[in-house]
Figure (cartoon, rainbow, N blue to C red):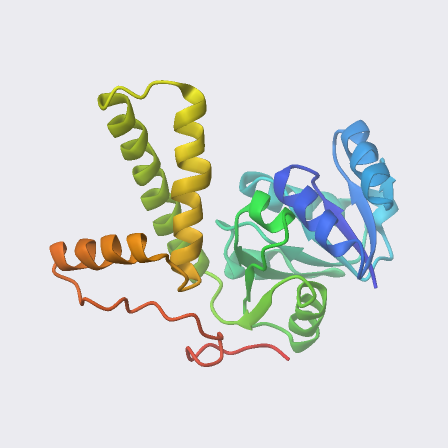
Length: 247
C-alpha cells in the first residue's frame, strides 16, 4: 500500500520509522526541508505539495488537533480524493464524519502510545472508531504491523491517555521535589532517577515483572491506599479483556 503521512513532528516521525518496512510511504509537512530530512533518514519519499498526495491508498494526519479539520478542507479545495485516517486524540469520529463527502472519507484511529516509546519499538494499542467497513479494514491493515488494533469508540483514548499523562507527570514532579528536598540537586542524578529508575519500574510493573524490592513497595502502597493487596493489573490480550480486536 502507498500511504501518505501529513506531519513529521514527533508522532509523524515515529509512525514513519515504524511503518517504513511494511508500507510505501510518502511524507508531507508544511516545512518541506523537515519532511525531506525525515524521508532521507528513513529511505522514503517526501513531497512539497498536498496535491502530490493524490491517488494514495490512505493519508494519515499526524498533525496538531486544531489543524486537522482545516487540513481536510485543504484536500477538498484541492479536489483531492482521499481515505483520511486521523490520529488526533481530540478530534471525534463525529467531527470527521461531518467532513466526509465529495471524495473525502475519514476515520479516527487513536493510539494509546507515547511517540518516543513507539519510535523505540513499543507496540501501541490503536483504537479505530466503528465506521464504513472499507475504512476500518484499511486502518487496521495500516497499523496492525506496529500495534494491537481494536475497533471501539476511539473517544476512550482521550480518557485513558489523560489519566496516564496526568498521573505520570504528578509522579515525576513529586520525585524531583523529594530528591531536591533530600539534598540531591544534581540534574544528572534527577534525570537518571526519573528516566531509568522510575520509568523502568513503571515498565516492569506493566509487564508484571517487578523485582522483590519493588514488589514489596507495591504491596505496601496498595495496602496504604486501601486497595486490594494483589494488583488488579494482569497483562492480557485485548480480546480477553472484552475488547474487539480487528482481524
